[in-house]
Image (spheres, protein in one colour):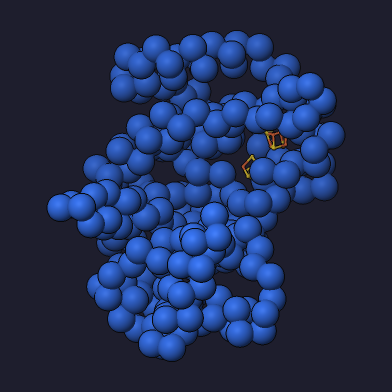
Length: 246
Ligand code: SF4
Ligand code: SF4
């Protein structure tokens, strides 16, 4: 893990990202009056994402050394694209700080609070914090929280992680004993099962459940083939209903 990271060339060449970075010259913005007031809401939602610049060695062995510290999870995000007017989604693997009650491989589950968050806030210094956390700028506007995440930096981060999918897939297989696709399908099956149970029980879905429901709506059989067919239909119908209501 690097301590004195500096944005890579792609960030440096991007004026929008760099103007955002210049805000960080005044580190007092991270010294928590805002975050204390809001009681670390973002960290209660989910652990923050690592960018490739957070790591010195992105090889299988280098990342394994970091993962063996038991504070990080391999996770995934589904990227949506359109081919011949059809939306297609593909998983992209990346690393994030581990969420509470989640394991070293956590490809598709409801988000939970960051496992490292303490009653006094983040245990990491600014220098130690993952870039995903640094790229979320604490802000208050007219007395209301208006923290700003630069979408563009997240896009560059994912583009960079795409170059390291092979190492991450091998790590999933190393830790679970299963090829990444198999493991992902099992996690999707389990998430669909949990969602279907909540829908049947008429429990109002929380934000973290809706975030899981959304990609399921677009998933092809390639990802959902292990799910119970009735559970899957219920989730897709419910998702459609929510979309229609919007
Ligand atoms: S960054 Fe924003 S949401 Fe996160 S703890 Fe600070 S003020 Fe709250
Ligand atoms: S590592 Fe720190 S900044 Fe990141 S989510 Fe956890 S508590 Fe928050």
